[in-house]
Image (cartoon, rainbow, N blue to C red):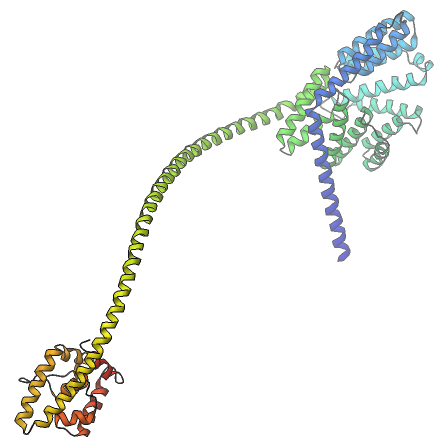
Length: 523
């Protein structure tokens, strides 16, 4: 289980690394595409440097031929018309010098340029007019170029047909086998052709091993590296490996762009993959670059190939542009609406700030008034405090007076009680007492009854001012709290007085505090 987990983890890490690597390569490609004009300028500078060689004094025809050949090498993947121009000049020099090697070399190069521009019949005509026996007498490199020219001619002509299973492929394979018979196995050309043959035989793994080995020792970003990576990408296309196709087509395209190679296929192939992945912007960027290169190079064969996919990608790109423009207009309308709301919000905020400022000013003025009122209040409070102190002093004095008054009143009642001889005198005395007491405490009965439940309130009989219960507590209110004194005044036994007091306490709403509440009546 643990081993399986490690394997899955390693596969995930490998896929993540591969994705990151491909994204990095594609990012570099897009950056190089943006700087394509710079690499073209560098190419033009190199061409101008070669052309300066024509001004050398007393230049020979052989030297002219070498300079033209050097210019051809600069132009053959850059601008076909110029390449053909310098080849035609060399053909005249070769015929003038009657140099068979020059004649055959130039014609082989012309054949290559003609099929590249789409002039297949002119290319075939040149090659068929070359004497194979004569070629065999020339240096071996000439024979290799002769066989290579036929191989490429038939290969590209076969690929241009709608039916790929045609006789031209077989002819191309025959010339390739002839080349493999004369090339040295250790040469790059031999290994590349072997890889191509293995790819055609669906032996992709063996083909990739050869190309990976060659690529390992390809250090510079030249046209040879572009060819190697393009072949590798084609193998991965047959296998259906999209990621590796993108990687190697991108590397090939980068090398060709940096070397200003206009006759290329990798950018076009990559554009189709990106289009299928719905990466319309980058697909259009790549196919537009390919179309520009094909037109600049005047390669009719490449222009024809690109023209089959360019309208599709261009239509998708234009549709996307239109869609983006519509979205942009919608966003513009939304932004305009939001701007209006923003202006309204700013105005509202401004008005609110202004209103808040006005409120703050009003609050400031109110605070000043409140501060003054507070100062006045503090002064009034101070005066009130002094008045309270004076009032407390007066109350203390009044309390003392009341105590004295109540004490004397008690004495007075005691003395009066001593002089009462019969019931009539006692009755008259009680009546005078009741009248006098109620003048002093007119709300005594109401206040007293407020201390009892509704059904226990005291009801005075007609003709009476106070009953016995009220009279007992009237005496208590006057400060006569002693039951014996009360009994003596009312002419009851002490037991009776205790009974009255206990019964009323138990009936009151506050048993323990009844007499305290009685003492507060009239205060």
